[in-house]
Amino acid sequence: MQNENMIYKLLCNIGFAYLGYSLYKYVDKKMKDEGEYVEGFTQLEPFVLKRNKECYDDFYASVFDEIHNFDKLASWELTQVLKMTMPDTKHSVFLDIASRTGDRVKELEDGGYNAYGLEASNALISRCEQKHPDLEIQKGTPCESLLFEKNTFTHILCCDFAIYEMKDKAIFFGNCFHWLQHNGYLVLHLVERSCFNAVSPRNDDEVKWLPLIPPDRKQISKVKAEYEDFNFEKTFHFPVNVDETNVVLLRETFTDKATKHVRQNEITYQMEEIKEILAMAKKAGFIFHAKASMKKYNGDPHQYLYILEKPM
Image (cartoon, rainbow, N blue to C red; front, side, top):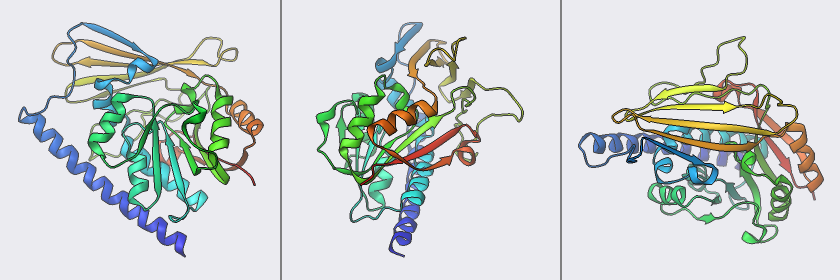
Protein backbone atom coordinates (compact mmCIF):
# COMPACT_ATOMS: atom_id res chain seq x y z
CA MET A 1 0.00 0.00 0.00
CA GLN A 2 2.87 2.38 0.84
CA ASN A 3 4.48 1.79 -2.57
CA GLU A 4 1.14 2.37 -4.32
CA ASN A 5 0.75 5.67 -2.47
CA MET A 6 4.27 6.68 -3.47
CA ILE A 7 3.58 5.88 -7.12
CA TYR A 8 0.32 7.85 -6.94
CA LYS A 9 2.19 10.75 -5.42
CA LEU A 10 4.83 10.68 -8.16
CA LEU A 11 2.19 10.51 -10.90
CA CYS A 12 0.47 13.56 -9.39
CA ASN A 13 3.79 15.38 -9.30
CA ILE A 14 4.40 14.45 -12.93
CA GLY A 15 1.07 16.08 -13.76
CA PHE A 16 1.98 19.24 -11.85
CA ALA A 17 5.41 19.26 -13.51
CA TYR A 18 3.76 19.11 -16.92
CA LEU A 19 1.50 22.06 -16.03
CA GLY A 20 4.54 23.97 -14.85
CA TYR A 21 6.38 23.16 -18.05
CA SER A 22 3.41 24.36 -20.13
CA LEU A 23 3.42 27.66 -18.23
CA TYR A 24 7.18 27.94 -18.77
CA LYS A 25 6.69 27.42 -22.54
CA TYR A 26 3.94 30.07 -22.61
CA VAL A 27 6.11 32.64 -20.83
CA ASP A 28 9.10 31.69 -23.00
CA LYS A 29 7.08 32.24 -26.19
CA LYS A 30 5.68 35.54 -24.90
CA MET A 31 9.19 36.80 -24.19
CA LYS A 32 10.22 35.86 -27.71
CA ASP A 33 7.20 37.63 -29.18
CA GLU A 34 8.02 40.78 -27.22
CA GLY A 35 11.65 40.72 -28.29
CA GLU A 36 13.03 40.07 -24.80
CA TYR A 37 14.54 36.75 -25.69
CA VAL A 38 15.73 35.31 -28.97
CA GLU A 39 16.17 31.57 -29.43
CA GLY A 40 17.42 30.13 -32.65
CA PHE A 41 20.35 30.70 -34.95
CA THR A 42 23.09 33.18 -34.14
CA GLN A 43 25.74 31.71 -36.45
CA LEU A 44 27.22 33.94 -39.12
CA GLU A 45 28.48 31.13 -41.34
CA PRO A 46 26.14 29.70 -44.00
CA PHE A 47 27.00 26.16 -42.89
CA VAL A 48 28.29 24.73 -39.60
CA LEU A 49 29.02 21.06 -38.90
CA LYS A 50 29.40 19.67 -35.37
CA ARG A 51 30.37 16.08 -34.56
CA ASN A 52 29.72 13.97 -31.46
CA LYS A 53 30.66 15.88 -28.26
CA GLU A 54 30.84 19.17 -30.19
CA CYS A 55 27.10 18.90 -30.90
CA TYR A 56 26.10 19.53 -27.30
CA ASP A 57 26.76 23.28 -27.28
CA ASP A 58 24.72 26.31 -26.20
CA PHE A 59 22.53 26.33 -29.30
CA TYR A 60 21.70 22.63 -29.00
CA ALA A 61 20.96 23.03 -25.29
CA SER A 62 18.54 25.88 -26.08
CA VAL A 63 16.45 23.72 -28.47
CA PHE A 64 16.97 20.32 -26.87
CA ASP A 65 13.62 20.09 -25.09
CA GLU A 66 11.69 21.12 -28.19
CA ILE A 67 13.21 18.61 -30.58
CA HIS A 68 13.10 15.74 -28.10
CA ASN A 69 9.88 16.43 -26.13
CA PHE A 70 12.11 15.49 -23.22
CA ASP A 71 9.63 16.23 -20.42
CA LYS A 72 6.97 13.90 -21.87
CA LEU A 73 9.51 11.17 -22.57
CA ALA A 74 10.85 11.40 -19.02
CA SER A 75 7.34 11.08 -17.55
CA TRP A 76 6.59 7.94 -19.56
CA GLU A 77 9.95 6.32 -18.78
CA LEU A 78 9.67 6.93 -15.04
CA THR A 79 6.13 5.58 -14.92
CA GLN A 80 7.37 2.30 -16.42
CA VAL A 81 10.34 2.10 -14.06
CA LEU A 82 8.15 2.66 -11.01
CA LYS A 83 5.68 0.00 -12.10
CA MET A 84 8.37 -2.61 -12.68
CA THR A 85 10.67 -1.97 -9.71
CA MET A 86 8.34 -0.56 -7.00
CA PRO A 87 10.89 1.73 -5.31
CA ASP A 88 10.20 3.45 -1.99
CA THR A 89 11.20 7.00 -1.25
CA LYS A 90 12.99 6.19 1.99
CA HIS A 91 15.68 3.92 0.58
CA SER A 92 15.84 4.55 -3.18
CA VAL A 93 18.64 6.57 -4.77
CA PHE A 94 18.54 7.23 -8.53
CA LEU A 95 21.29 8.17 -10.97
CA ASP A 96 20.25 9.45 -14.39
CA ILE A 97 23.06 8.98 -16.92
CA ALA A 98 23.00 11.59 -19.71
CA SER A 99 20.58 13.67 -17.66
CA ARG A 100 20.47 16.38 -20.37
CA THR A 101 18.21 19.25 -19.19
CA GLY A 102 17.26 17.48 -15.96
CA ASP A 103 13.59 16.57 -16.38
CA ARG A 104 13.94 12.95 -15.21
CA VAL A 105 15.91 14.00 -12.13
CA LYS A 106 13.41 16.78 -11.37
CA GLU A 107 10.39 14.49 -11.55
CA LEU A 108 12.06 11.95 -9.27
CA GLU A 109 12.95 14.67 -6.76
CA ASP A 110 9.38 15.98 -6.89
CA GLY A 111 8.16 12.45 -6.18
CA GLY A 112 10.20 12.30 -2.96
CA TYR A 113 13.13 10.25 -4.27
CA ASN A 114 16.82 11.04 -3.93
CA ALA A 115 18.03 11.57 -7.49
CA TYR A 116 21.21 12.76 -9.17
CA GLY A 117 22.21 13.43 -12.74
CA LEU A 118 25.36 12.67 -14.72
CA GLU A 119 25.99 14.79 -17.81
CA ALA A 120 29.07 15.39 -19.97
CA SER A 121 27.93 18.62 -21.64
CA ASN A 122 28.59 21.92 -19.86
CA ALA A 123 25.93 23.60 -22.01
CA LEU A 124 23.25 21.08 -21.06
CA ILE A 125 24.23 21.34 -17.39
CA SER A 126 23.86 25.14 -17.61
CA ARG A 127 20.45 24.76 -19.26
CA CYS A 128 19.45 22.34 -16.50
CA GLU A 129 20.55 24.83 -13.85
CA GLN A 130 18.36 27.49 -15.48
CA LYS A 131 15.31 25.22 -15.45
CA HIS A 132 15.93 23.33 -12.20
CA PRO A 133 18.49 25.21 -10.07
CA ASP A 134 18.26 22.88 -7.06
CA LEU A 135 19.23 19.62 -8.79
CA GLU A 136 22.56 17.88 -8.20
CA ILE A 137 24.20 17.16 -11.56
CA GLN A 138 27.68 15.63 -11.76
CA LYS A 139 29.88 16.57 -14.73
CA GLY A 140 31.34 13.48 -16.39
CA THR A 141 30.65 10.21 -18.22
CA PRO A 142 29.69 6.74 -16.96
CA CYS A 143 33.08 5.43 -18.14
CA GLU A 144 34.82 7.33 -15.31
CA SER A 145 34.91 4.72 -12.56
CA LEU A 146 35.90 7.05 -9.69
CA LEU A 147 32.92 9.39 -9.96
CA PHE A 148 30.84 7.51 -7.37
CA GLU A 149 31.39 5.13 -4.47
CA LYS A 150 30.55 1.44 -4.54
CA ASN A 151 26.94 0.47 -3.71
CA THR A 152 25.65 4.06 -3.95
CA PHE A 153 22.49 3.74 -6.08
CA THR A 154 19.38 1.57 -6.16
CA HIS A 155 18.56 2.63 -9.73
CA ILE A 156 20.68 3.78 -12.67
CA LEU A 157 18.88 5.09 -15.75
CA CYS A 158 20.48 5.19 -19.20
CA CYS A 159 17.82 6.32 -21.67
CA ASP A 160 17.36 8.31 -24.90
CA PHE A 161 19.90 6.30 -27.00
CA ALA A 162 22.66 7.27 -24.53
CA ILE A 163 24.17 3.77 -24.37
CA TYR A 164 24.89 3.88 -28.11
CA GLU A 165 27.22 6.86 -27.72
CA MET A 166 29.55 4.67 -25.63
CA LYS A 167 32.29 2.84 -27.51
CA ASP A 168 33.39 0.65 -24.59
CA LYS A 169 30.19 -0.73 -23.13
CA ALA A 170 32.09 -3.27 -21.03
CA ILE A 171 33.51 -0.41 -18.92
CA PHE A 172 30.04 1.15 -18.71
CA PHE A 173 28.46 -2.07 -17.40
CA GLY A 174 31.33 -2.66 -14.99
CA ASN A 175 31.02 0.81 -13.48
CA CYS A 176 27.23 0.59 -13.19
CA PHE A 177 27.54 -2.79 -11.48
CA HIS A 178 30.06 -1.28 -9.05
CA TRP A 179 27.90 1.78 -8.29
CA LEU A 180 24.65 -0.16 -7.79
CA GLN A 181 23.53 -1.66 -4.52
CA HIS A 182 22.65 -5.36 -4.44
CA ASN A 183 19.22 -5.91 -5.99
CA GLY A 184 19.64 -2.53 -7.69
CA TYR A 185 18.37 -1.88 -11.22
CA LEU A 186 19.95 -0.66 -14.45
CA VAL A 187 17.42 0.76 -16.94
CA LEU A 188 18.42 0.83 -20.62
CA HIS A 189 16.76 2.22 -23.74
CA LEU A 190 17.51 -0.37 -26.45
CA VAL A 191 16.33 -0.64 -30.05
CA GLU A 192 16.25 -3.26 -32.77
CA ARG A 193 18.86 -1.81 -35.08
CA SER A 194 17.51 -3.24 -38.32
CA CYS A 195 13.91 -2.08 -37.88
CA PHE A 196 13.47 0.71 -35.30
CA ASN A 197 11.96 3.94 -36.61
CA ALA A 198 12.97 7.56 -36.31
CA VAL A 199 10.29 9.41 -34.34
CA SER A 200 8.98 12.80 -35.42
CA PRO A 201 8.81 15.51 -32.75
CA ARG A 202 5.89 17.92 -32.68
CA ASN A 203 6.05 21.57 -31.69
CA ASP A 204 2.38 21.68 -30.72
CA ASP A 205 1.46 21.08 -27.08
CA GLU A 206 -2.17 20.60 -28.11
CA VAL A 207 -1.33 17.58 -30.27
CA LYS A 208 -0.27 14.24 -28.85
CA TRP A 209 3.35 13.48 -29.78
CA LEU A 210 3.30 10.53 -32.16
CA PRO A 211 5.71 9.10 -34.73
CA LEU A 212 4.84 9.35 -38.37
CA ILE A 213 4.93 5.59 -38.94
CA PRO A 214 2.45 4.42 -41.58
CA PRO A 215 1.37 0.78 -41.23
CA ASP A 216 3.18 -1.89 -43.24
CA ARG A 217 6.06 0.38 -44.17
CA LYS A 218 9.76 -0.35 -44.19
CA GLN A 219 12.05 1.15 -41.58
CA ILE A 220 11.69 4.94 -41.39
CA SER A 221 15.09 6.61 -41.09
CA LYS A 222 14.16 10.27 -41.72
CA VAL A 223 11.65 12.62 -40.08
CA LYS A 224 11.03 16.36 -40.31
CA ALA A 225 9.48 18.99 -38.04
CA GLU A 226 8.86 22.72 -38.28
CA TYR A 227 9.45 25.16 -35.44
CA GLU A 228 8.97 28.89 -35.05
CA ASP A 229 12.53 29.85 -36.01
CA PHE A 230 13.85 26.84 -37.90
CA ASN A 231 13.10 23.64 -39.75
CA PHE A 232 14.45 20.41 -38.31
CA GLU A 233 15.34 17.12 -39.97
CA LYS A 234 16.61 13.97 -38.28
CA THR A 235 18.11 11.13 -40.31
CA PHE A 236 19.65 7.81 -39.31
CA HIS A 237 22.23 6.61 -41.83
CA PHE A 238 22.69 2.85 -41.80
CA PRO A 239 25.69 1.19 -43.50
CA VAL A 240 25.10 -1.02 -46.52
CA ASN A 241 26.82 -3.88 -44.72
CA VAL A 242 24.71 -3.44 -41.58
CA ASP A 243 25.44 -7.01 -40.44
CA GLU A 244 29.20 -6.38 -40.50
CA THR A 245 29.46 -3.09 -38.61
CA ASN A 246 27.76 -1.58 -35.58
CA VAL A 247 28.23 2.04 -36.66
CA VAL A 248 25.07 4.10 -37.32
CA LEU A 249 25.25 7.83 -38.02
CA LEU A 250 22.59 10.21 -36.68
CA ARG A 251 22.47 13.48 -38.63
CA GLU A 252 20.37 16.38 -37.35
CA THR A 253 19.89 19.37 -39.68
CA PHE A 254 18.63 22.78 -38.55
CA THR A 255 17.76 25.33 -41.24
CA ASP A 256 17.19 28.90 -40.11
CA LYS A 257 13.99 30.27 -41.66
CA ALA A 258 15.25 33.84 -41.91
CA THR A 259 18.81 33.40 -43.16
CA LYS A 260 18.64 29.86 -44.59
CA HIS A 261 21.86 29.12 -42.69
CA VAL A 262 22.33 25.45 -41.88
CA ARG A 263 23.62 23.78 -38.75
CA GLN A 264 24.28 20.03 -38.84
CA ASN A 265 24.99 17.63 -36.00
CA GLU A 266 26.56 14.24 -36.69
CA ILE A 267 26.52 11.76 -33.82
CA THR A 268 28.09 8.34 -34.24
CA TYR A 269 26.27 5.48 -32.54
CA GLN A 270 27.89 2.15 -31.73
CA MET A 271 24.65 0.25 -32.20
CA GLU A 272 25.12 -3.43 -31.40
CA GLU A 273 22.23 -5.86 -31.55
CA ILE A 274 20.21 -6.13 -28.35
CA LYS A 275 21.39 -9.68 -27.69
CA GLU A 276 25.03 -8.54 -27.89
CA ILE A 277 24.42 -5.73 -25.40
CA LEU A 278 22.60 -8.06 -23.01
CA ALA A 279 25.49 -10.54 -23.29
CA MET A 280 27.91 -7.79 -22.21
CA ALA A 281 25.64 -6.93 -19.29
CA LYS A 282 25.45 -10.57 -18.26
CA LYS A 283 29.25 -10.85 -18.36
CA ALA A 284 29.43 -7.89 -15.96
CA GLY A 285 27.09 -9.73 -13.56
CA PHE A 286 23.62 -8.41 -14.40
CA ILE A 287 20.51 -10.55 -14.74
CA PHE A 288 17.32 -9.76 -16.65
CA HIS A 289 14.45 -8.30 -14.63
CA ALA A 290 11.83 -6.89 -17.04
CA LYS A 291 11.24 -4.98 -20.25
CA ALA A 292 8.60 -2.62 -21.63
CA SER A 293 7.77 -1.85 -25.24
CA MET A 294 7.71 1.85 -26.15
CA LYS A 295 4.96 1.32 -28.73
CA LYS A 296 2.23 2.86 -26.56
CA TYR A 297 4.39 5.93 -26.06
CA ASN A 298 5.91 6.60 -29.48
CA GLY A 299 4.19 4.10 -31.78
CA ASP A 300 7.36 2.14 -32.51
CA PRO A 301 7.24 -1.56 -31.49
CA HIS A 302 11.02 -1.89 -32.00
CA GLN A 303 12.13 0.29 -29.08
CA TYR A 304 12.22 -0.90 -25.47
CA LEU A 305 13.11 -0.15 -21.89
CA TYR A 306 15.12 -3.06 -20.49
CA ILE A 307 15.53 -3.38 -16.73
CA LEU A 308 18.52 -5.38 -15.52
CA GLU A 309 19.24 -6.29 -11.92
CA LYS A 310 22.38 -6.65 -9.83
CA PRO A 311 21.76 -9.87 -7.86
CA MET A 312 22.67 -10.47 -4.23
